[in-house]
Image 1 (cartoon, rainbow, N blue to C red):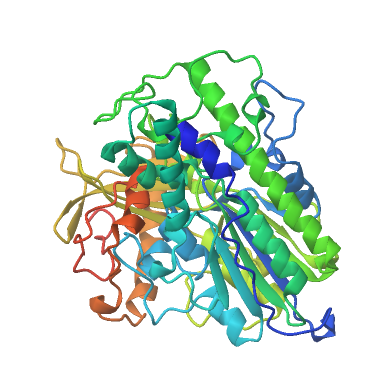
Image 2: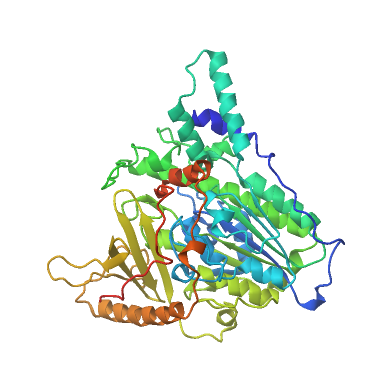
Length: 547
């Protein structure tokens, strides 16, 4: 049923496009006031090491470019070589991107919580300063229920509507009936409805809405946010462009086509400990399919940049391209994301292109954070900064006036059916420290060594181990140095968190329990809980490191 309906879904790329209403009239604006437009593009699940500007050459097609438009943007902008996300899944990472707050700072770390009304968003800051604001999202975790729509004059979905999904199901029923095939079972329909976001192709809809906005936006400076989801599994590039699946691995004749990637029992055991089953050659073919989907989304980035040029806006627009997290392909014995906080999911691409070629062609090795982007865009655009943030504009770093390296915190909370997965990571310019927790009710305790009772830290020296594969021994002086740096940074972070006002938990709960809305979240492999799994906490509180 999935393949047939996926083919039907591609015919709907032109449906559901809601035109952005022009907020003022006129063909342009006077840029002499110093205010600049901002285009922020987020590409869900995009690994940095699959982009040409980060050195990627496809394994089976080394002469073909995976990301020519992003690479071209990078050539006239700044590439951040050590950018890191705040969490390894979409909801908390995008909340950090759009608030300037770490995962601990905004507290939206599970899908039963929404953004605190006391927190300010990037869109609100732009809107209050006079910018036209618009956003287009294409994945279920960017839904307005979490607070992502705040500050946007228009915040539109590019996903299929329920009515369109109903029509796809009805078409499949009719097709089977006319072919004399067995009807669509209830179980098949549930699976399709739950996983349609994995199969749907949304980039064309995102781009169409962006192009329309750029034509109609009016005289005011604008902030336009675009979220592209098609790199996310399942990896089915042929659903976007027939033949694209062979673009980066033309000689493959195996059995894997990227369908049902996260749930395919041929890939791994579906129960703990999730033992790998897929062979090396098949795995690399799936990664070639992933590359093809990156190229598809890159094509749409190119279309938006071309529309910016055509509208005469490119010379006065800041453009940022970033990912919320990466994806694992068994680097640490797993696939997907929202499982670990290792480099393949936590290290992200970040490209920033400023008007007039400012800082063009630069590469920055210093560590930066996904939540640094919000204050950076406001700073360069000429807008007031966010009232509260645990981030900082990248402008001093680019100007060479910032010398101390930034600490990079990240966190993961995943109430999976088999266990509650809670992790925290800290990084500086050299070291990574990761710790895991046991969670009983609302109490978290750091995992300790069974024999010694000592708290366990997973410490990596990225100078010699950039992919975080060989943890240092506790007897290593570097281990002790890294843990002590982490402890100091953790105490500083807690001081910021303690100073922030918080709303009552009742104001933070997501109350929408519509099964049509929750099913896609569960099907993404995130193991979202039942609708009544509402925590009593307002944020996840973790104990001090090693205490």
